[in-house]
Amino acid sequence: MDTASSQPGELTLSLPSAPPSLAVVPEAAAATPTAAGLPAALLQELWLTAEAELCGLTQAELSTALAAIGAKYHYNLPPEARPTAAQQTAFYRALRLPELALAQACALGREAAWQRFLTLYRAPLTQAAIAIAGSATLGHDLADSLYAELFGLAQSSGERRSPLASYSGRGSLLGWLRATLAQRHVDHHRRTRREAPLEVIENTDRTAAPATPAAPLPAELARLTHAVASTLAALAPEDRFLLAAYFLDQQTLLQIAPLLHVHEATVSRKLKRLTAELRKQLLRNLQAGGLSKRAAEEALGADPRDLEINLRALLQTSQSAAFSDKRLH
Image (cartoon, rainbow, N blue to C red; front, side, top):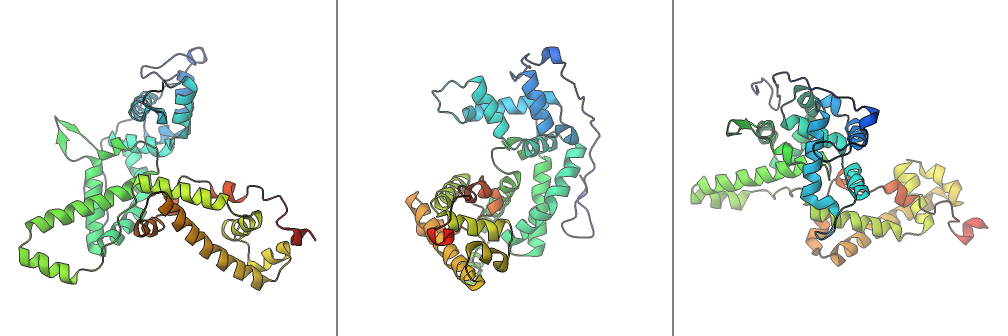
């Protein structure tokens, strides 16, 4: 791995080529369990869905990773439950398989996977690191140090280990990477504070700018997802239509107004009132779910891409129904 560059944040990877052996599952063996316990037909389906061939990940390697993740999280079932084949299949299909395959292939040092990883994630990771560190220079340094750690420079028992191997595919890989960045920044801050003289720490505390909030924890994201879903589900059909038309379909006020038989200025006022009420209701739902007021407000600053939610499905529920008696007339 060569990190030397004339520009901060530039990263060049040079890895040994390790072409995978790609096996095709015969039809006669479709129902035969693999070594990791997954039926061959299911493994073939998951391997294709994950686009693992693009990352250089074999079916056997994906099967081993999936079996380990399923056993670790008990297929999202209570500890006392015995998972059925259907429940295991549903668990595997619900994972973010392309991101999981990419992370596993990178952890194994596959060059194709690393090139794909950098293409997809280097720019957003660098931006996130700069926002967390509060400085372009420090941000590039933070991002570069994370790349080195993810590549697995630290060796144990002669083997390279990468934190990417611990990614489970249950949430977005970008969200996992942002959380890891924030944690490494906190770790670095704590380490340097312990090493700095007391007077330096005191002067820094007096002049330091407010810290950038760390990435939300998975539990907070789960509460936020539930709060968003329950808040949107409680909206009237007309309000759901208005949000979907404006924010998802990107229709203009002039286009929406005839559909609701009102003036476009009325649509503008309704949108302003509706978004303000949504924020208040979201805060109430988050606090009802156990968050403090401050934690609830911080949760609303989460990246929407980290939420496991289908906004279009929620907003378009019962959209074909009449919006109001006034509109019908």
